[in-house]
Length: 394
Length: 125
Ligand SMILES: Cc1ncc(COP(=O)(O)O)c(C=O)c1O
Ligand code: FES
Image (cartoon, rainbow over all chains, first blue to last red; front, side):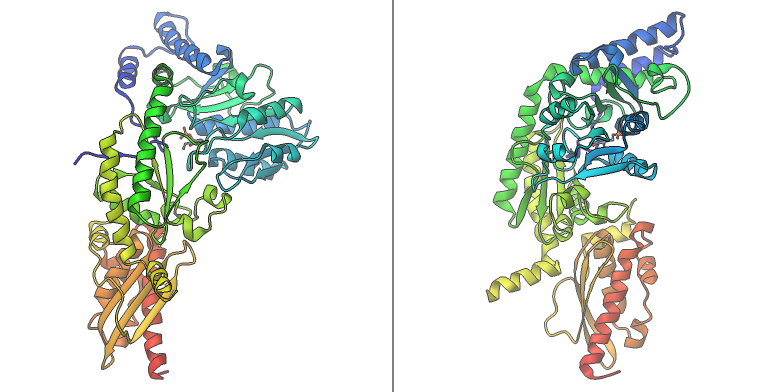
């Protein structure tokens, strides 16, 4: 039974060209890029090529690209680094309720350091209202951090509009573009951002490597101290093979351009139309149009997400859930909660996220398995029984 | 986190699943931690549970423990059934991941609640 991987927002399979680039580095190019002799310089050249690729995608200078250990570290450096560097100017931060924990938890840590944080609400589609951002700005606001595209529901935020506002108020603006980098346009000047986080393993690159774009002149402090690597903002010998693999992955994404996104959109809509036609009591989460092409988040009422995932796994299908039961914290998705989805509904949320290995046949196989899975689970769901009884008496 | 083969077996093929016609006792409980719901139905004859069925909305562990508890109580005297604890159910399933132990509490509580429902109906204190 072939596996159908529908969890590409969690991570992606390393593509063959990237694996090859990685292997090449691991086998032959072990030099420390900070050294001057030939093998060090070889590593340096490879790494700087990756930096140029990133600068091209971001529309920035190569010096503004900092390689990190991944999206989480990039977010932490951005949030903690900018806040702490601007403490004299003010102690207020604006972010949203739907950020990844890599942004939310540094914000919580800053609250303990005396910062005050505004967590902006979102509408039922998971969209931030730029007017809310504007209203929240105070004379003490030192950072606005708003994600580009949400990992759970895929909603794309009006970053460019917020960017103009941030610039007008001279406030540093960070966006977590981990889910959009390589997929949507992330030109930092068009977006109007001062910092941008990206991660390699979401675009078919290796895990444990990412980048932070830092606009020249941005006041920021490191969160780790050591050598002079990455302009001392991220000291430590770089993960050179990882960076090179990330660079290769980004280069390939950029070369494919919007064609792949269009293909994913078709797959996603084929799946959603099929679900709507074959499974009653379903609801779409996320914005109808302003959404990542590969992201489909659906609530199956009267069932629980983990049990859907386990059942789909029996059919060789990998997906994710927003249910409290699947999270170690046993809390329902904070993103769905912010969108106004009550806990008993988010209990049945399933996220299916497409990637380059998915095909139409995959969608059709899912459409064969999923209705049966949901029907079986509903057949012994006490609340489905109550619902059916209510319908009979009504 | 991984479930034991026994948990997966009970999840895949839950025993005694469905609603019971004219049950002698019904236990309806919800899990305050994650919001899951379980209903357990029992038939009682001569102080002995002769049949048990369940309906559960919840995770793999919740469904498997529901299934297992119905197996465990069948043929048990009420007083013995009351001694069945959540850790006994979990153990019968070959153990549960630590963050899933709370799910087995649902099964224990549903059983207790079904038995007291039966006793209340009978006017037994
Ligand atoms: C929006 C968002 N931000 C940050 C991260 C963290 O990235 P990484 O896994 O590279 O640390 C993720 C990945 O789960 C994400 O989806
Ligand atoms: S019942 Fe919700 S986590 Fe098991």
